[in-house]
Image (cartoon, rainbow, N blue to C red; front, side):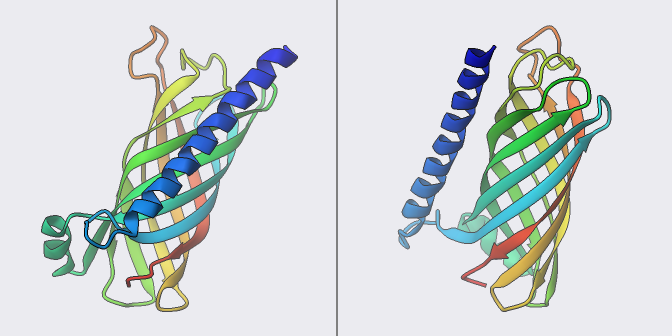
Length: 203
């Protein structure tokens, strides 16, 4: 049992390190002003989540980097004060379960699309959604596997206390499943409540 726990935590560590290395590589490439893949924002969120069943709770840390959309998409949206970005979001969570021992999860959301309605006002609403993948230590629960896919969607509000820096509050719904890779695939839904900050250097 200790060996299994150690192997699981090592795997989670490798996933977190890999996601952060990817984040760093994306940030480095984003310095190339000749391309459209440039950093639009940086941020960090903390989150609390709970499931609809099984009394599972999540305590999460989510760093993120937002990347500009291609100009052919970005410029038409900006005419209506709508600003979009793709978001790379690695995350790690401490998970508590009423019936099992506590565990962890780690993964990354790579295809999060965030749309903000911003004409320079202090309070900026946004919506976001996307997909991701993660490794979880949760057992049973109809999940079938430890490697899962996630579908997060959310709404939120940014309060810009300076021209470029905002405090962020987000509600997010997340669905987990193994996408049919196992015969057991009832999935798991959770509500997440997130607080953090965002920095938009080009705002």
